[in-house]
Image (tube, rainbow, N blue to C red):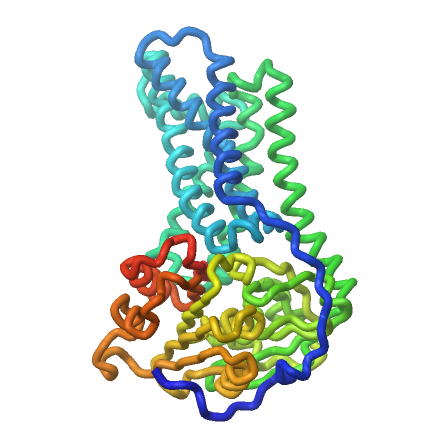
Length: 463
């Protein structure tokens, strides 16, 4: 390990020169187990609703049809949960973290698509057995004779299409912007499928209380989307009037943006968090992309640092001072609030240094804080002078490991290497940020080194 030494121009004032900023204390976030218990309770309520509206079951056709009804109810409930997880509700974002919410959303999406397919196939099969008709004939009857089933089928096919395109193998081949806009079709799919639940669902046809509660569930989530993803960003835009103040080139393909505005302390942003940024220029205004703060938030300025990984991020280097900015956030739980131990190890890979650089600036207990920064080449090191100055002022430690494993002759992020350099590794909280593959490898190494899972903190922005 080698300490950072070479010089770069800090794009913001040195830490010692910054005025103290009084920020509101963030509200507590929702505990993951509590949220999961609420989701599970809702699923059980769906089963109770089916049970309450189901007479005696006779024959194979009835069994298949009722299995289809159960899967349909769970699918209808599942789409509400999926949307709620991505509604950017602050208690969920603070308590669970954007990456875990995204994982829940991805796993839940697979289950929901499976439930939708099983619902349609079992209903067709059960009805065909009961009516003594063929599957093709019964499908035609359902589509042409049952109210709103055709629209629901179109909605279901949209869900399946989005699910297939969201598979890891498919999404790696498309741009973030393409994937984002394809995902918007799920709202259309939900709208198309909603009415058939009341028109043909035995649980709702004569149960007005169930209709009211089910509608309230959908309307509540729709209101959360409208408020947190539309109204709040617009309100923040008028309140804070953010603009790009400066674009600073950190390294080839990497730029930092200084964004200034009014009353930014009211946002309650913390080091380690991110915003979704919308730059109001032609070609960029329609996309809100997540970028972490790369310096501790100030009362009148925020800084992000972005690598050129796509069309959107590359275009940021061409922004002009004065460009208007809209934000959503702050989001994320990779903050000092997660800290459990006195000692802290920050492990950054590549552009993953951005949130950890901000944390390195603000985490209390300087001598107990160590930053390990992994890059493939010395020219990829960001914030070299800033990190060295922060380490000097705070009496903390910063180490850069540059070079590929073949050049180094060993894996510097293996369990053995980490333990050799930090014999008391298990007594540390460890914050990890980097590429998906790097983060997975580091977390695996930490677990091999017997670091408790609750002491490992990680967020990923892979879409």
